[in-house]
Length: 395
Figure 1 (cartoon, rainbow, N blue to C red):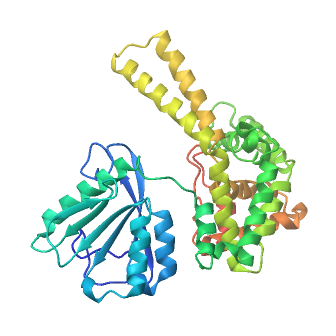
Figure 2: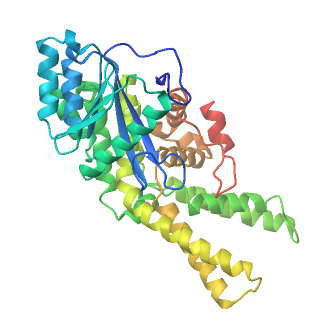
Figure 3: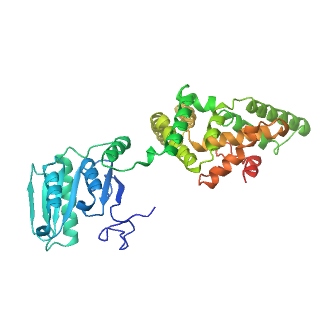
């Protein structure tokens, strides 16, 4: 994505890449302990709308930003030439409860009105550094007077965009079909407890895959009765593959139904919506468990630094392992679904004559996703094994 930087900002470019009327939206994370803290002393995300246009020529964008922005900044030149349209826009902004900053190119000094959240700042005889510091101070003051910036969700913003006369991409038929497919999958996931979803719907990975990988390594570390041990390990590996073949394919079939769409746009929307829905479903649980994990990890490190192996250390290490398993249980995304496809395919590849048609199509589905820009996992770090049969079939 090409990003437009104002020529007087750090890291700026003199070349303007956006056309007139295009609204740039930029996310800024404020960090208390760094110089990035401009408008808030706390951790927060700020959304900055930058509209490169004459306001009178683009009323839709102006109306949208007027409703969404907490602080509105206008650059005004040659105020004597303003017509009725310009005066109407300025009157609406002046009467609005939102903070307003007018940068007057032909005036000097700074004036306030309207409960100290309306500013006129003269640019004449000001250098860039002085203006930058003043703007930061004024914006911070406006946000404090307004009890900080309001929050809003994207769905509400899309409704506002429609009222302002914009076409919303999400209303397209392909996007709605992709969203519907993702929501149908979410209904399948919501039938189970969040911590049990991967175990029930994606069972071929996790413990089964890790046990198979461990047995495979043991084949190359034989000792004692070599042939007898080798035969026993191979039988155990076949049993694990048999267990993988017995798992239900309903969830993977539902995923592939959407991924096999002939419309690439619909398929792309489905993948995006699936990622968003999975994040929403698992986010709260994942955040809570992750915080517990890192707190426990910190405690373990403190005990290790004492260079003493105590019962308390052993206990906390076991609790840390349990928390690690909980984190893995509530960590689910497209990569885990593709990993499941790979394990299903490898399990059935040992019996190619009995392989269902849906399973034989899985490498083609993964290849399409790879071509579309989604990464293919070469090795699961927990299992420490490369599924060569699956990867060769995909490529």
